[in-house]
Image 1 (cartoon, rainbow, N blue to C red):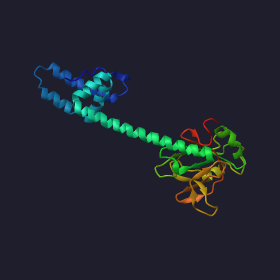
Image 2 (image 1 turned 90 degrees about the vertical axis):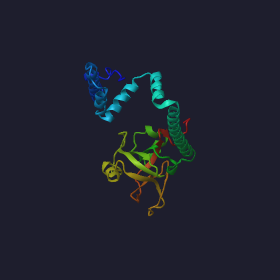
Image 3 (image 1 turned 45 degrees about the vertical axis):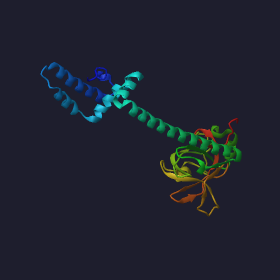
Image 4 (image 1 turned 135 degrees about the horizontal axis):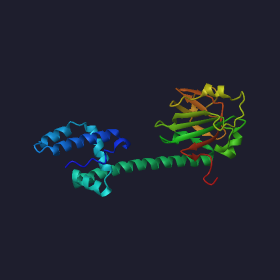
Length: 261
């Protein structure tokens, strides 16, 4: 039996014109078959087979989604059978467990990194798992002390970096690089828009951050210290930064503030 498709054919207000159009084609083929007493069932099957499989799958999914949970279960049980249904659900369950374990492990790694930052005032960047978002508030040397008590609330932040940890430890994808994000910086020649533009990181670029091992070295320690200068390496070339770390937020958690503070 072909299911009644009237609900799919909702007219101009339907959210999916493709589904509605295909529903009309199916219903038209069925109506013609019903109206012709001499019609051959094979002709109806051929007409339906001629419709695009991808669109038929879309219609089937739309119909299935509108069934109640009990009806959906009955359909799956009839189509798959008891054993196949159990196997399919077991595979889905395994997939969900893998995803949940990955989330738990990521959260644990972030918690450990934040805990160490609270205790030691340093953030070990290689400890951050892939997919973690890192936001850094960078300040001029003369202003960074003001951020210690205010953190993200400080309006004299000269630059804010938003990065995403990659699968390569200590390497980050640049999401945003903003100048004077709070609008409260007293701009001077020490750090103005032109200076920022000269060192701005391109969106989607891959960078490393940390502290140079000596002014003449190209080696970068992947560690950030509150109040210390933030250096950047890109394409294998490390450069000394002009700004200092005032605050760091890891997946929404302030890395330098205790949960109580």
